[in-house]
Every structure is written in C-alpha cells, then in structure tokens.
Figure (tube, rainbow, N blue to C red):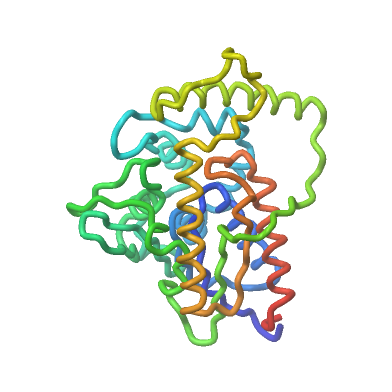
Amino acid sequence: MPSTPKVALALASGGARGLAHIGVIQELESQGYSIGSIAGSSIGALIGGLYAAGTMDAYAQWVKNLDKMDVFSLVDFTFGAKGFIRGEKVFKEMQKRGIIPKINIEDLKIPFAALATDITNNKEVIFTQGDLYTAIRASVSIPNVLTPVQHNGSMLIDGGVLNPLPVDKVNRSKGDILIAVDINALIPYTKPKLPKKSKQEERLQNEQLAAIMDKWNEVKEKYFHVENNKGKGKPAAEPDKKMGYFDIFSQAIQLMQDRITQYTLERDKPDVIIRISKDACSVFDFYKADELIAAGREACAKALKESNIT
C-alpha cells in the first residue's frame, strides 16, 4: 500500500461477540491501516469508545483474564420490570481500573458516535458529544436485560434496537475506507486455533461451569419462574432442550438485528464487510475473550484479503 489508508469503522451490537471487534481493530492496525473514525451500537459502542479513548488494550487485557466465575460475579441481578441486571457493578469496576475514563466524546482522539434508542420519544439517539460513560452505558442497555438509562427526560436503551450496525453514522473523510463489522452474521462458526489448555485448566473450567449453572438456575427460578429440574428425575448434566424465556428473547433479537443489518448494508454499502457468526458465543460469554478476539483477527484478515482494497 503506497500510504497509510484511513478507515471509517462501524461496529455492530451483539453482546460478548463484540469482543471480536478488538481483534478486528488489532488486525487492521497490524496491516498498516489507520482508524480515523468509529461509530458503534451496544458492545460496538463500548469497544469503539474505549479505542477512541486509548484504553481498549487495557480492557482487552482485563477481560482476557476473566474466567466464568469472574464474569458471573460482575453481574448484579435486580428484580424489576425494566431489566434483571443493573449493570452498575461491571461498569464501576471498569471505571475503577481507568478503562472507561472520565472524558467527553468531543475530546477523544478520533471522531466517535455511540447509538442508543429513545423509547420515550421513539427515536434514535446519536451521542457525538458529552460524557463518554453515559453514551456507552445507554448504548449497551439490552431491553429487558440491562436496566435502561434516564437521560434528559428520556429512557434510553440499546442502540442495536434501531441501528445494530451504524454504517450511516460514521464520520467520513475524503478518501477513507468504510469497513463494517457484523457480529450477528447467519454463517457457520469455525473456532480459531488457540493453544490447548491443560487438563487441570479444563477441569477447573468444568467445575466453574457447573457452579455457574447452579446459580443461573436459581436466577431463572427467581426472575423468570422457570422450574429447576435438578434433583427431579432429570440428570443435572443433561441440558434442557426446551427454549426458555431468555433463549427465545435472544433468538428474536438476533433475527431482528440480522434483518435490519442486511437492509443497512444494502442501503449504505461499505467497502469491506467483516462477518462474525452469531453462533460464536452467547450474549454473556465474556470469558471467551481469547477465542473471540482471535476470531475477529481471522475474519478481518480474510475479508481484507478478499476485498479489492489490498
């Protein structure tokens, strides 16, 4: 490439799959691209905002060291009609670590836009100035899961509700390359190659998973009134094949986001589309950071190789 190409980057919503955005950004930089602007919805707003603030690497290092129990311990459940997770615990931890700095969006190193949905006035909200924390927290407020944010008299929820891949909200400059990262793609998922874990690590993970499933069953009984089958004639290790409330809700949201995303990509055609399978992980699988970041790097490298810009 004759000069450093500048990228306008759009990052999609999609829960923990958004950790793949980190790998995409790392791969772009390793191949000599300069990111000139970012727009993101939900987890895309989180990763994009942290990159623009210069703290994405610190976040990546922190989240890569989280295991299943760490992730579960950062979830603060609440009993309310607006959502069953407050979200304060994990965000306070990130603020304490300096991962989300106290800074206004207009003072970031590159133009950044975070998308949220105003359900009071039935409209899209685009944060391009003001407090970075408020913008990110509003954008990640998954309906009925994370409690919404009250802002200027309105109730704000996840930006992915109306605009899961905001390619139309990126600040463009002359000669830049528009790259969109879709993390809800209806494509098969192939795990990236990672170093094999030791038997001791695998055993510890299985023990942690069993403990989490016990806690999750308690949560489902309390908040969703889903009966726990443990000790009632059904083996505890046997997965329940019936879809519960949260499974149905997640699948519906994914399908909705995929349809909106496909329409968006047809209307505002990016130069490069990087696709991550919706089957890469579930919404809260943040303990899979190494795998998801690696998946993002692989998908980015593949898309760049197949594009006409390299």
